[in-house]
Every structure is written in C-alpha cells, then in structure tokens.
Length: 391
Image (cartoon, rainbow, N blue to C red; front, top):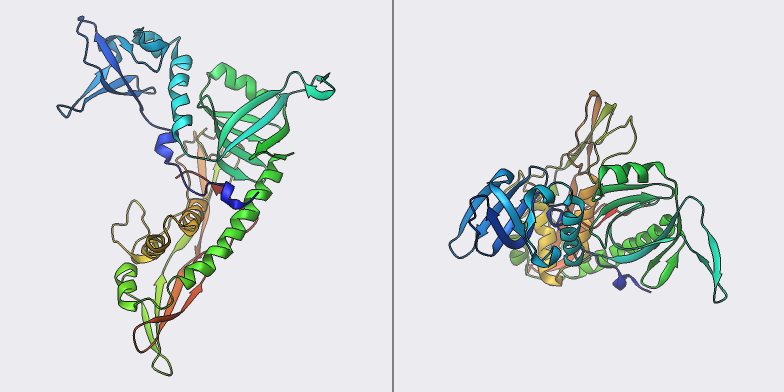
C-alpha cells in the first residue's frame, strides 16, 4: 500500500460542522399557506429556518412559532412533520438523517473501527474467533494524533476517540453522550484500505510516515519545477522580493522573507467547551496563535495577493493540487485554535516565537532560474504533528 491511497486534501469545516443545514423542502405556515418546494437552511441551535427562492433570488428568515409543519425528502420520505417535533422529540432523528448526507458529501479518508464497551464477549463462529458485542463503525478521518482520532461516522456524528474513551462532538442527545463519556471503550482493530492496525498510534505511524515521505519527495519537485523558468514570470506570482545580491559570473540572488510569529499564552480554566478541537482536561495551557506576513498568508485579516501563500499557489498552478499545498495548510493548522468558551479563566505569561520563512532564487544573466534555496520555508515534519483533514 502506498501514500497514493491517502487523500491529502482538506474538507471545508463549514460543511462538516455547518451553522445551518441545507435541505430541499416545503413549509406549511400556521395560516395554512404552503410554500413552494425550495432550498431551506435550518438553524438547529437558534430554532429558525431560512427559506431561499433561487428563481426570484429572495430569502426569508422564518421563526419556529410561524411554522406549522416542514417536509423534506431527506426525512420520512417527505412527510410533513410538526416543527415542534423537529426541534423537540424528533430532533436527534431528524438532524441525524441530515448529517448522514454530510458524511456522503465530504471527500475524506474512509476507514472502519471496531470497538467494544467494557468486556468483550468472545465466541467462535465457523471456527473463527469473534466478539458478539463488538461495535463496527464506518467513518471518515478528520484528524489524527498519536493517541487520538477525530472522525465523522456514517450517521454523520462527529466523534473523538482515544484508546479508552469516546466523546461525541456533534450528534446524539445529551443523555446518550453522558453515558458514553462514563464508559470505558476498547479498540479491537482499525481497518484502512484493507490493512489492519491494532491501535490508533499504529494508524498514525502509517499516516505520519507517508506524510513525511511525501514532504521530502515534493520538496525536491518544488525546487526542480522552477529550474529554467523565466524569473520575471515567477516574480509576478511571488510578489516583490526583499533582498537582491549580485553574485559572480553574472548571477543574481533574489530573496523573499516572510515574517511570521507564533505567540503562546497560558490560560488556566475551570471548565472547557466541547468544540471540535478543545481540550478535555480541566486545567490546561491553551495556545493562541496569530500568523502574520508582510505580503499576506490567506488569513481572514490579510487581503494582499502573493507573499507566502502566493509561492504555494504558484507551485500548485504548475503541478496542480500539490501535496505541499496541503502540507502548508496543515502546518498553519498547528497554530490555529478553535473558538472555545470558558466559564472562568486566568491569563498567565505570553511568549512569541519567530517562525519567519525565507526563500531565494539564483538567476543567470538571461533571467533564467538556475537554483532554488529555502531556509525553513516549509517547516520540517516532526512526530506528533496533528494531521488534519479539514480547515
């Protein structure tokens, strides 16, 4: 099995954990009016529905107390269901059916995990050892650490699992989730691409080995892909250089520097949230990361084109959807922190670490690139890195 079996790309987080779930359906209002069949966006948390009419390009925000029933082919074959039941007794079933569609839509690495709660009940069937109380889950990987895995299962539930515990991030009701959190779980095996892994760390080791191997392979290809290219064309993609050095024999070296800083502050908390990447401990050190670049790094606050991300995009335009494009986004993910809510917290010390990037091109007298030099432009892989497949 080779790394070509791993899908090295990110899914859109807003599709995995949407604020509103999109369906097609009809609304029956309390005055008896029935809407045309159109797109509906349901906000489960705030209990209202957006009705969107593509033909007239109009939208309406409709509250639950204005709706009598709602019908969609995604639930009970289009049968109209009372809105009070959708946000009440049928909530888990209704939104579970919609989350199943999310599982089918996202392109991620599929695997099968077999577990048992508490003690396994062994049996022999057709001369094969089996466990009668095992739980087999088909799922897609969201992220991997050496001893934990986050995934979306075939029912659309978002789950975090380590060697002994399982936590439901999205899906299920509160009562079921409390029960799960109190029970000890044992992983029997993990099957990825018809290969069996005994523990999460064995699966992580395989992914990390391929991650590291692909990085070094693509780094060589990255440098080779610019050789003999016209410098002026590359300059349009990369943006203004920072330094210029005149070398011997008519050669010139152009250097791009992208200042970046990683700041870490200590936060002590008595309670934690249940977001997708929050800590499960009760007292934590929380890393708050901020990335900044002279020319932009595709963050929410940067609007300039080129710069660090411009170099990555330039390579992708030559090689297509490259692994290094995924790799650079995963490195950035190491410094990203999900929004978390704490009941109480105390701020401690703060430090800043310089993680600036540099890359240089050596150009001959004909403006042809003859060598590519980089100094920590791509952070080298290290064991324990979070391998994440959404952003």
